Image (cartoon, rainbow over all chains, first blue to last red; front, side):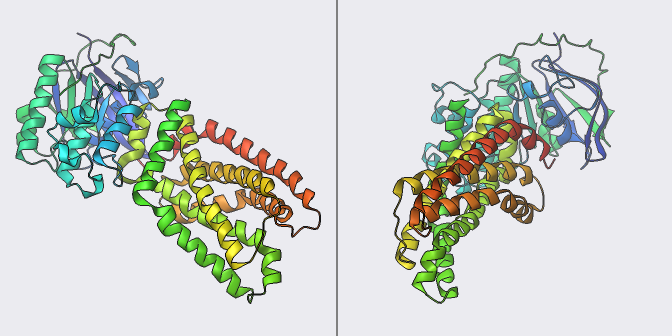
Length: 237
Length: 227
């Protein structure tokens, strides 16, 4: 099966600093990959580069069949990405945020805010509460629910467990396992909560100084054909 | 594209309805500024009436700066800019939507200010059509310029100072055209018809900056990425 993420000596530069200094990595459909490493190792930049938010300036990078070096913009609509920040508007209610971002992502109007919220067990009573009044964990649930609702075959999650309570973590882990095992979604997550994340992941790669320090399996898959991976619509929850 | 623009405009207006920054914070500041102009000019009604168009539009510019800052901040906080880039929304539509929402907010502010100058300066409008057309075109120009420079400065650490430095010189043609048009509409110009030629300048500025913003917003959104 063609890798969803295929990087060969990928370099991303932030300012003058090479945040990714030649990363080689494969991630396949249905695989859960944990990206770990010390602060500043390039974990977040790796996820942002795969999401098309940061350019890959050298090397090769094909994500979901899209050549990121040639044009990274098309991949953005195809991935589900959750970064450190919630991406939500504090003054707007949870329902307003979910509705806006769902419409902006081009999701069907049949997908209601309630169904998106239900995927991360967000209480219905919170629908009319401004996001600014939510706890960090509740905001995280909304962000994760929105990402999972996009129907992407690649989830890129930066510190997804941060702020979540025990129930939220269990629910999130179950959703990730379901998406990977049942729907074939490839999940890449960066986390400092190693024990939890390692129990969830199929394998771990370690980044140090913008390069892969240790990978249990050799990255030897041939380059996927550009345009070969057709994004599929899969909804969780 | 128009559907996406409407979605973004509705979102920005919803943000304003929830926060009421323009109506509850910026509008009172605008009224205070008008009153200070009145005190500064020694409450001489004749002088105040004569300079009403200029005072009015300088106040509009200053308040527009606050509203634009607010519009920029909405996307700068909490990673919303990343979410917009990932959404797949056409950058031109994002520009048009944000500019349209600003136009709506500024028009409300301008209507309140018109009541203010009528009350404090005893200014009377003699050409309502001219006020409406010049006000609308001037506002479109302000909103387009502000949204464009807002995107340029949004990802920088010095946006609070950089935005006024770029915005205020760029809106000089709007200020000139709008003040001259309003002088005609308020009757402070002995030749009321002299106001209409300035409307053309306002129209040109509005069209040019809307077109430039539509084309440039995407690259600006990428180029101002703080990451």
